[in-house]
Amino acid sequence: MKCTVDVKNVKVVLNGKVILNNVSFKAEPGEIFTIVGPNGAGKTTLLKALAGIIHITSGTIKVCGYDLVSRGASSIIGYAPASITIDPWCKVIDALIAARYGISNAFLPTTEDYEEVYRVSELLGITHLLDRYVGSLSSGEGKLVLIASALVRRPKVLLLDEPLAFLDVRNQALIMKLLRSLSRKGLTIITTSHELHLVAMYSDKVLLLNEGRVVTVGKPSEVLRKDLLETIYNTKLIDVERANQRILIPTAKD
Amino acid sequence: MNKKLFLVLMIISLPLLILISLGIGTLASVNINTLFKVLLGLNLSESEKAIIVRRLVRTLAAMIVGFGLSYSGLSLQYILRNPLAEPYIIGLASGAALGVLMTYLVGLAHPLYVFISAIIGALAVFLVVLSLTTVLGFNPLSIIIAGIAVTYSISSVNIFLIIRLLSKIKGAFYWLFGSVAYVLDYQLIYSSIPVVVCCLWLLLRSRELTTLVLGDEVAKALGVNVSRIRAEVIICSAISTAAVVALAGPVGFIGLAAPWIARLAIGTDFRKLLPISILTGSVMCIAADVIIRISSPIMEVPLTAITSFMGAPILIYLLMKRLGWSGA
Image 1 (cartoon, rainbow over the protein chains, first blue to last red):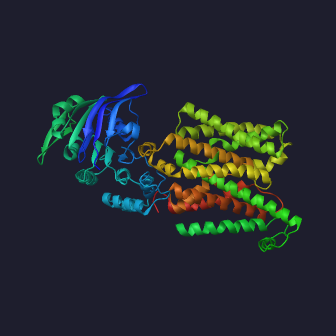
Image 2 (image 1 turned 180 degrees about the vertical axis):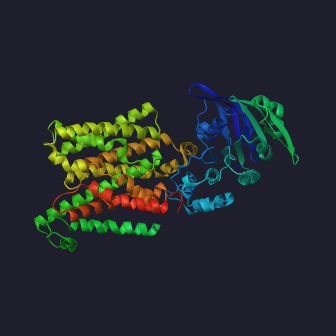
Image 3 (image 1 turned 45 degrees about the vertical axis):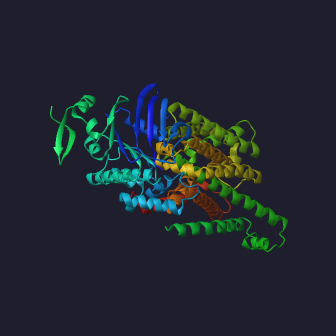
């Protein structure tokens, strides 16, 4: 089963403040869809709304054609937050097994649960961490465990909040390749990121969010434009071309 | 320690300790041989029967204390994400003690009233903690802060009451320090019911509870109603601890040590930890009571003194061996 995520006119109000307003987009199966925007633009809130963590005030979110609010979609969604939220006193293997909740109805973890945990751990190169306590991991290792916790559910829709944050370049490349391979298998992948140069490399579609509103959606080359980003981020950027790739980076010069 | 070895050790220890507990006491003529007479179906004298029943009540009381405190401690450590959380941190022991002291203050020191009053005191203080937590904003940290603040306040009141009632509270002396020496059979029945029912409830909820290690947001994304599960755990732990405190007074360290010993020995999955913690807590409490009766047959020593003395080195040893953030 392949899943389209269809978001229409979504509004989120938290503590009387409008965080998202009139947000609409569609993420197709096999697509890596990345949400970018300045700090406080509403990227994480949007991802949380898609994961069913935050209730939307109005609008609709359809996942695989089902309404997220009335039906829920926890069994087909894999979600990993930006920062490491796993109990530091928990072992990695037990955290990954816990993330399989709702996949099987067995009271105790099954052989299938363990097999899936080992399969994903091998994919991410974290099998050597399985018997470690989460609190003993580095930020990068913890991030890989978080991503693994989303993948062990074999989701149809993968929601990753800043999947490349805390990672070294080797692991950034590993995650980008993994996302590409998963999208080729038909997964719908929605991420957020501040690493604009990497977004241009691994994303199929980019949504630029500012102050809770969609500025534009399109291919990376259409959205990640110097003039547009300089206006939205209110900062000067340098356009660099390396190995046939145009990247935008901030400058330290006045 | 090897997981299977630990499990086998605990499973063998429990019936063995129960037998030892039934076979020892001030009356040396009622011993293990008397128990064999029971097993062989031979008749016992009335006095032998009475002593065996008395010891059985005491042994089961120790078991219920370990049972209730260990799973309450484990559940609280899980939902509050605090490795030092234990049942008494949310004001239950001080509340129960206040309830007991109030019965002496108003002159209603019948064992049944003392028992009911301890439960009411524990739950009333817990409600104060919950109200304060609501004001502070409900989260794992606020409940611990509110619990500690209320515990210290109530403990101060208790100290004044103990000084004022010093001559009247001789009967409650051992209770105030935590002891199963004078538990009555009906108290055991009254306490066991809520302890077992709450445990079964948490067992039913343990799959959801396990997801809380991933953090509230991820658990919500998995479809778990985090607020409801947290409220259920707190209420179950409160009722269970109140029942245990009413039975035997504030027995320290079991709620912290038993879940930790089980956790360090067998891992961190709640579903496996719940039964193993209960087993560990029960074994620890019965063992502590047996040690009291062997080491001090005439004068009763509070259970807390032995549980802390016994549990602390085991816990420190396991922590040094298995933690230090170095992994297994």
